[in-house]
Length: 165
Ligand code: SME
Image (cartoon, rainbow, N blue to C red; front, side, top):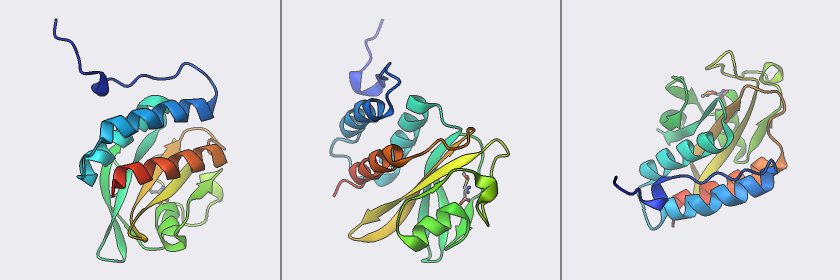
């Protein structure tokens, strides 16, 4: 039987401790990305790794397009809306505010764009390149209050890896 490249197999931490799970995942993301500069390839692997590690409903990227719109990028999960205007929904808001946005209950976020009725909470983290937002990482959970500052810190760190400047 052919042996698989270690880098292609995600080793998930068995611990329930979220910080430790993110630490383990982040190390592997660093290996997966390596010196790859193609951001689409890196986004594809990172969205798969995040979803596989935590079992989130949806994990993926929206890319800034035309300065006023996000367009769907690499993701893992069910089909999603293709374009989101600057300042609209959680994704467009994170882009406008240039900071991560955590939504504990999507039904309480005015203007939330529902791609799945199973989505209950959400985190959106901007991806910066040369000080400019070039994309956002969006993660949806089927649980309320799924995200906190541990997720925020770890995911902000992770998106810096994929830009690979
Ligand atoms: N809920 C997002 C839209 C994208 S989907 O969740 C994948 C938003 O409000 O921007």
